[in-house]
Length: 113
Image (cartoon, rainbow, N blue to C red; front, top):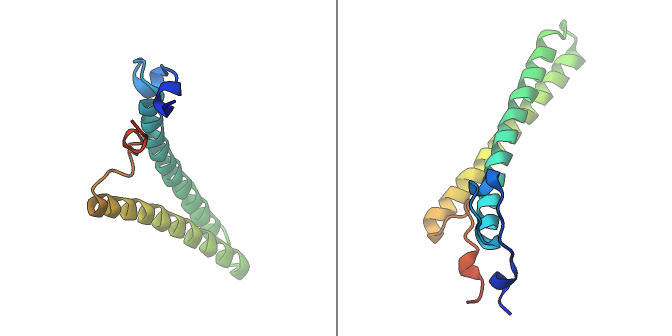
């Protein structure tokens, strides 16, 4: 039995714009949107971590321990942002080299027909 015939019709209005699509198309769209959401959440987390570190640095009152703690938090936020965008850059580079779109994951071609 083929895998694609087992998958039910899915009609999530948020992901598929109200259309009934098969499970493979739903999964492809879901993964692409999930990756986008992860990047947005990561960027928002960076902003708040960086902002909190900056406020902690400003309010440290010259205390060496608090300044080092705030500096470490800012460094960790920047490191997380760099890692997140490095993953995006590597995925984009692999798309160009390998010739298929990793971030929108087309699983239909991987299944037996």
